[in-house]
Image 1: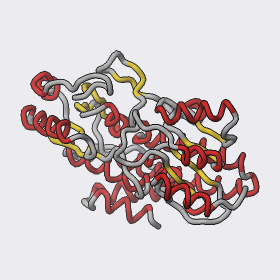
Image 2: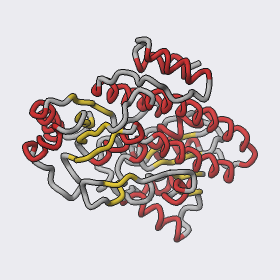
Image 3: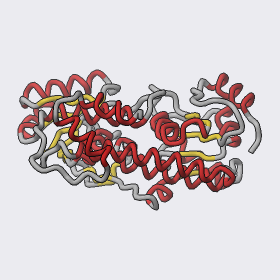
Amino acid sequence: MRTRTLLIVLLLIGSFIPLTSGAGEKPLVVTSIAPLAAIVQDAFGDSVEVVYIIPLGADPHEYQLTASQIELLRQADVIVTTGGHLPVEKKIAELKEEGTITSEVLFIDDYKAEGFRYLSEYWYNSKDNSHGIWLDPHNAMAIAQATEKALEKTDPYNAELYRKEFKSFRERVGIIVEAYKALVMENRTAVIQMPSNQYAIEWLGIKAVASIKPEEEVPALGVDELVSTAEKTDLIVYGKESPDQLKEAAKELAVKSGKSLAEITVFWKDRPYTEVLIENSAAVIKALGEKPPEKLAEARTDVTRYVVVSIIVGLVLGTALGVILKK
C-alpha cells in the first residue's frame, strides 16, 4: 500500500467527503454511505482509514459521483456498498468492470456469503427490501465480516489484526442482540413510516405489517387508511431524519390509533454503530412498554447474562449496555 494521506485530504476538501480516521499507511476503506462507515469504523477502529461518499442529507437514490470521488475510489483498498442498487454503487460496479478501479469491492453476494438477508416488504408485493439493511445487526455483522476478508486479501500482513478486531465487534453486537431480544414478547407487530424502519425492528421479533410510505416511487398512504391496521399492532415506528410531513403522519397515526411511538435513527455520521443500535433498540422497547419475559433465553456468556439482568432490575437500557460494552 502507498502513503496517500495528502491525496485523500485534498480530495476530501474538494468534494466535502468527511474523513473519519487518522493518517498513516493503513488500508483505505471507502463506503457509499455514512452508516456503513460507522460499521467499518466500529469494527476495525484505528487499524483502517474510513471515508464515505454520499454526504448526509443528500438523496442516495439521486446522488452521482464527482470526478474527485472517482479518483478517491481509485486509491481505495476496499469499497463497501449497500449491495449495489444505488446509482453511485452501479457506477462503482462499472468502474470496477472496466478496470478504472482495482480495489476489493463488496456487493450483495459478498454479504450473503456471510449470512446477510433481505426482508420481504409484505405491504408492497413482497419484494426484497433494499432500504436500511444496516439497521439489522445480523446484516451489519455480515458486512463487517465481508470487509474483514477483503482487508485480509488486500493486506495479508495484518490479517490477524483484522480478525481480532472483527471478533471483538461481533461479540459486542452479539451482547446487544441477546440483551434486547430477551425483552420482547412474541407476536409483536408495528406500522412503520418507511421501508428502512423494518430492519430496526424485525430482528427483535417485531413484524412490520404496513408502511406509511410503501416505497420510493409510491406516494404515502393517508393516515385514515391505516388507523384500523395500526389499532391491531403494538407500536408505530418512524425515523427522526425523515421529512417533516412523514413524521407528522406517523405522530397523527399514533394519536388516532392510541399506539406508542418509537423514534429511531436511520442515517447518521461520526457515531459508532453499536451506540446507534443500542439507542434504537432502547427506543423500541420503551415504546412497547414490555415487561421482561418470565423465562430468558440462556445467556451464552457471563457478560451477556449480567447485561440482561442489569436491564431487568431497572438500570437505564442504554446506560446498562453502554457501560459494559466500553470495558
